Amino acid sequence: MELIVKEENHLHGINADLFSKFIMFIDAKPKTIETYSRALKQFIRYMQANGITKPTRADIIAYRDELKRTVKPATVQIYVIAVKQFFKWLQQEGLYSNVAENIKGAKIEKTHKKDALTTQQIKDILAAIDLNTPIGKRDYAIFSLMVTGGLRTIEVSRANIEDIRTVGDSTVLFIQGKGKDEKSDYVKLPAPVEKAIRDYLRSREKVAPDQPLFSSTSNNNQGDRMTTRAISAIIKGRLLTAGYNSDRLTAHSLRHTAGTLNLLNGGTLDETQQLLRHTNINTTMIYLHHIDREKNQSEQRIAAAIF
Image (tube, rainbow, N blue to C red; front, side):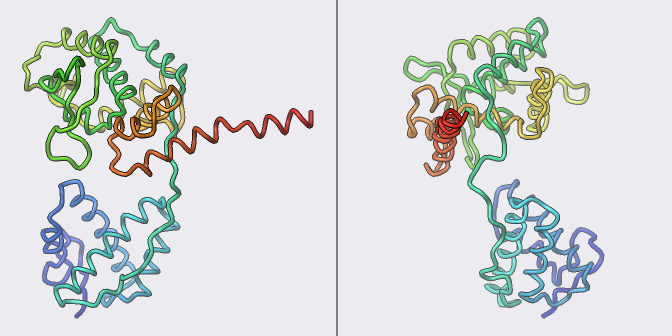
């Protein structure tokens, strides 16, 4: 059987609309479907460019190697996984042999791609936010929440006002975490963070319980739920305003900062895993490794001996 690739009009080029059938088969979340769609579009473009109608194992390896020259290792890994799953499905359906079986993606270092911020840097950034405006109050509240609770942008975007509740003697925010279908996790709101959020809510017009916790102020969707892109842009803007201009400092840096500062200030590995909602404690161990290395004074001892 040939995988006949024509003009990419809605990806109908795959014989018998196999692409669409595969996407329906994987029964994944919208974000995963979007990722697989993007990855397979890239593979189809590669086949078109190279006149491939009967892909072989060598073609898949050549495709992977070309990806390695043009995109980051994490992207290579995602794209190769999508292709491997596609051919695995084709074999299961008896449509094509699994020519991608056991092909490796890219080696990804177990380290963070973004940097954490220091305690003083966080103080500088928060101090630079004007709290006399509703936007300033909002951005201060978002920043404070993310850096103390280790929230992802999607968790901030999904939060509603009614998600602020009490558990025991603590005020908490229930969140819909990564890969979750409902708001089953929560983060505690320290007094300064709760105050910042309530100060912001008092400056808003719409504060019904089912309203977004943080709302947009743009002309196109004023009052509506903020997108993850908008939240990321706000954090990046506040970093730049405070003078921290680095590609390694983004909204995700606040999550790394939460994990790092918790460990540095006496938090245990288990507590940090719970704070960041890591399924695998090995993910949390990466933070501990960086902290142990930072505390290692070997260079200073050697310098003291020499100079």
